Amino acid sequence: MSTITAVSTPNAPSAIGPYSQAIKAGEFVFVSGCIPLVPSTMQIVEGGIEEQTKQALTNLKAVLEASSSSVGKVVKTTVFLKDMEDFATVNKIYEEFFSGSEHKPARSAVEVARLPKDVLFEIECIAG
Image (tube, rainbow, N blue to C red):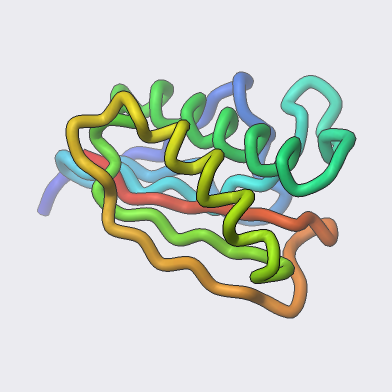
C-alpha cells in the first residue's frame, strides 16, 4: 500500500469541516473541493461568478503546489456550478487557467442545488 499523507497550506483556505485540503496517495494528489474563500480572511471573495471562479482556481493551484504537484499535472477535475447559465463564463476562465498545460484535463461539470457557504463555484481535482 502506498503512503497516504494529508496536505495543508496557509496559501489556501483552511478546511471548514472534517477533511484535508488534499491527500497525497502514492504519486497522486486528490484535492478537496476549492471554493472562493480568500485565505487571509476566510471570507468569500467579493464579486460574481468571474471573481469566484478565479479565486477558487487560485486556491486549487496553492493546494497543488503545496502537494509538490502543479496545474500541468492535473488529470481530472469536477466543477460544481450553482447555475449552469454561468458555464460559458466559467469555461473561458477555466480554459485560460489550464492554457499553460500540455494537455486538457478530463472534466465533469454539474449544476447543483447548493454549495458550501452559498458560493457560485467549486472545483476539485486529481493530479499526478
